Length: 435
Ligand code: ADP
Ligand code: ZN
Image 1 (tube, rainbow, N blue to C red):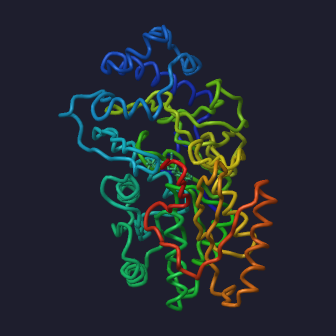
Image 2 (image 1 turned 180 degrees about the vertical axis):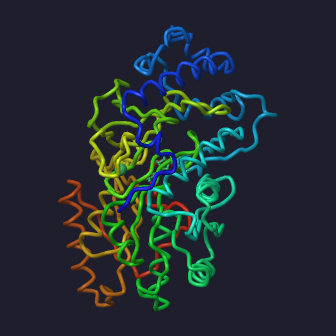
Image 3 (image 1 turned 120 degrees about the vertical axis):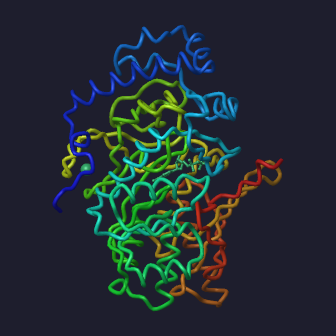
C-alpha cells in the first residue's frame, strides 16, 4: 500500500532528531509544571529533583511518577498548569476502574490531540475522499471528540453518530456510504452481528477501514470483525489523562501501534519496583506529555501492560511501537492465586468458535474464590439439548483450564442473552470487592 502521512516530517523523523526534539520539549515542560503546579513542585522537591537536573530526555527517569491516585487526590484543579480562562475544554475518563478523572485542554492541546487522531486516520490509507462514521460516544468521553476532530482535520465527511441506536447507525452507514468506522471493538462486533442479521453480506457494506480502540481486544477478534465487515481493522490507543484516543495508532503493518512520541514519551517500567525496563520487556506503560499546556502529566503510570519496540516498520514511520495492551494491572484478576486476564478468556472463546460475548463472575464463598464464565452460544452452535450443552460447557472449561491453569465453571447462555455495551464492554463482575 502506498504510504500516506499526515505529518510526514515528524512521523518519519530519524531517531536522533526525534530525541533532540523530545529533549527540548521536556526541558521546557518540566519548568512549566514546576513553576505552575504546586502539586508537582512538592513531588519533585520530595524527590530532591529540580528543573535544572533535567537537561535531556535521558534525565526523565529522575522525575517522580504520577498515578491515578494523584489525579483523584488533586481533583479537580490540583494539576492544572494554565489559568482556567486559557482552557477551552474538559473531558473525563469513562470511570471503568473507579472515580472519574477530569482533564483540561487549551486550544493548543485540542489541536495536537486532533492532529494525533488525523495521523491515525491517514495511516489507514484514508483521505478527504472518505466518509467517516464516528460511533464512539460524544460528550465527556474522549472517543467521539477525538476522532471527530481528527476526521475534520483530514477533511473527511464526518458522521458524528455517537454510540448507540444501531438501526440508525446501519441506515446512515448504508445511505451515506460510510467508508471508515470509528468505535469500540465490542460495538463494531455488535454492529457486524446486526448487519449480518439484516442480510448485509460484506460485499454490500461500504466500509473499508475501522479504527477501534478504548478497550482491549484480541487478534482473533480483529480477524472476526475484518471478515464480517469486509474491512481492515486498525487499533487505536489513548487515555483521557494524556488527551484521549490517538496517543498511539496502527499503520498498514497492523503489528502494534506507533506512539506519537513527539507529544507523548513512552517508558516501560517494572510495576513493582518502578525500574525502567529495556526495549522489548513487558511491563507497565508510562507516559510523559511533552507539550500539552493545561494538563501536562509527567511520568504518568497508565497501569496498562505492554511492550515497546523500535524495530523498523514497513510503513516508514520511525515512531516507537507499542504492542496491544494485554490488559491493565488493575484488570488482572487474581483468582485462587492465579493471574487471569479477560483477554485470555477471549482468545479461548474465539479459538473454540464462539463470539467474544462473555462475562466473568468472581465471588468468594467460604474463603474460596468461585470463578464462573457465562458465554453466549452462537446461532450456529445453538442447541436446547441438555446433554449437548453440558458437553460443550465441559469442553470450553477444559480449554480455559489449559490456558489459565485454573478451572472455571462455564455456563452457556442463549445468543444475545448477555447485555451488549455501546461503549466499553463490561467483562468482569467481581463480587469479592463488595465484601
Ligand atoms: P478509564 O480508565 O475510565 O477507562 P479512559 O476512557 O481514558 O478511562 O480509558 C483509557 C484506558 O482504556 C487505557 O488506559 C486502556 O486501559 C484502555 N484502552 C484504550 N485504548 C485501548 C486499546 N486500543 N487497547 C487496549 N486498551 C485500550
Ligand atoms: Zn508502521
